[in-house]
Image 1: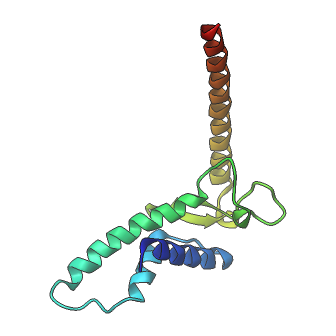
Image 2 (image 1 turned 120 degrees about the vertical axis):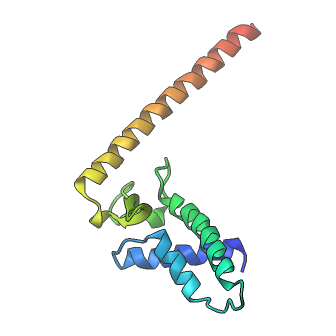
Image 3 (image 1 turned 30 degrees about the horizontal axis):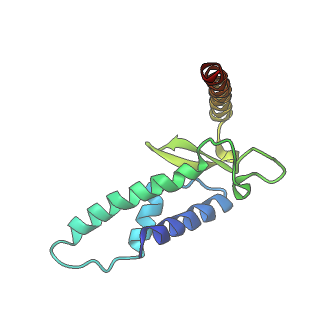
Length: 143
């Protein structure tokens, strides 16, 4: 099974959890994947399980990344009836970044997310200003 198929399976598992309204912890997703594949046998089985777990956690963290703040949110991640509010957000749970349904996020967590988005907007506006300044300066140098 290649990495893309592993990531797809993880996406499906996380989506199932979110559809059920429960938190999707990456370590639980990885454990479930490993439980489905117990055919590692022999003296080195534990070695392969440990290193497989580590690699799968790296992939799971990438999958969680699809929920990070972005200027464009995929429609399947949006809460029905909203244009920007997501069904879930990455939040710390049990010492790891989990995907938490918006209904299970605290007001404080959601306000922190809103503040983060406000800060991102400031950075984007500053970036746009610098692009315009650069174009203006470049035009003066060429003249």
